[in-house]
Image (cartoon, rainbow, N blue to C red):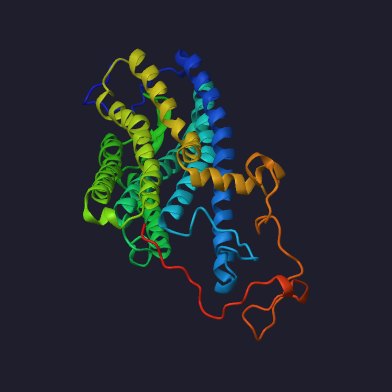
Length: 393
């Protein structure tokens, strides 16, 4: 059956789902696997990031004179994922992936099952909710990817106190992402009496209105893409200046390496967006008039690739970022002794997240007054503030 510009794409004269039962069943198995991997992996990633934020919270509450420094007898665990804008954006990105994996994948699997059984009443009840949640979740994820690239571009090279994406501002933007995503997906309910429903042409719960569906896959996908591309170009310009300009003589080599490593994850996520998201946008906008026998299998394969990103983003964090690998190791070290140090070897001064000296106590009148058992071996207690200078980048 060929499509026509005069006939709505999601018309009642859809294809028979049983003609593509093998494709649908393979897709269901693929989605169940992604559901398990994505739900578990993103949930652990969220816990890992929250664990690092908790470590930073504990560190900030300790007196400056007791924070870790060379030769200190009071080692304090320092977070490898600081409480900053890019960490919160990665946390939100993992939440979006978890929501898509744990909610939208099962709903899509159930919808495919109803389509195979010909349960039209069940599809009429399920599809408006399933399609609305899926499109809202997808747009929130795409906008977060764009903000992540834009954040690295704007704040790269700024002193910590002058950064635009501070935690409060980033939290406000994340809230704005969800407000924008919900508003855009509520529009179909007001424009058409059947804003969302089962689309017999692609065998999915979808936006019924052709113009609104094209709007989503063009404008709403181009906005995050523009943010990612412009942010990536800005990052490359910053990196070039840090190498070529006179300021490169001031910036330590270790800071330059951190710049490159922290930006690699942005480029990797943008590449994944181009590989997974752009093909389905092209397919939905430009290939809707092709023959059903070619369009439906092609669409299923492209969507299987698209869904893959929700289950592999957390893997990319671990592969690309050494800080994430360290954060995972520290988190699992709470439960597995072998993860507490490389190779499972014991360290001379165990980290404070695994061991806290019980015999140290402090008086209310002094900044640093350890127990008498340690008096003979203590370093002098400094009353002055030993706060380290904020480092750039």
